Amino acid sequence: MIRTNLSTRPFYNERIVSIWLLLFLLAVVVASVFNATRVLQYSRNDTELGLQASRDEARAAELRKAAARVRTTVDPKQIAFASLEARQANDLIDRRTFSWTELFNLFETTLPDQVRITAVRPKIVKGQFQLTIAIVARGVDDISQLMDRLERTGAFTQVGSPIEEHVNEQGQILATLDVVYAPESGHAAGRGTGSGRR
Image (cartoon, rainbow, N blue to C red; front, side, top):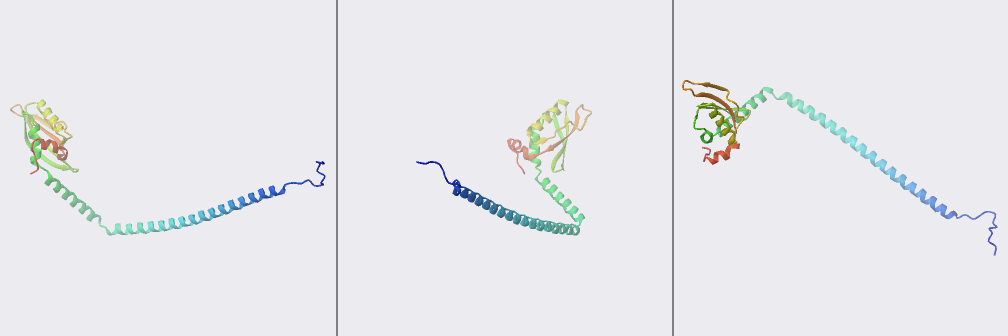
């Protein structure tokens, strides 16, 4: 049996090469179509975003013009007057909700035996009740004890050193304290003494 290839042109399996080339060509076509559709989609999105941005800029310009027109029609004096009236109304509401009974009940539970209160002046500063309390005490220790007791109630804050202090003819100390009174935080202490708003 002769095993030698006697043909003048050797046989190559061209079918496999053709299949691979066809598959490669198909992959290139699919990738090209995919890329083209993506480019078109991105281009369309970019155009839509550009149009939306233009519309938004035009709307913002219109709103700025409208705000400028409104600002020119509003009188600053009217705004200041309305603001002042609102502040006064808030002060009146705060004064109405101020409970002298609750305050004096707190004083009753905190006042040392050797201290007397001679005057209390409330005022509203930045939405807070500030009290100026005039007291008469036998000694400095009694004043310190009063300050400690006021702070422990939770209803009095910023209890500082007396702003005014001198001795009278009987040898008693006359002092003035400035404190911030926050009745909301002191309700528990007030309820403990049986106090309530009247």
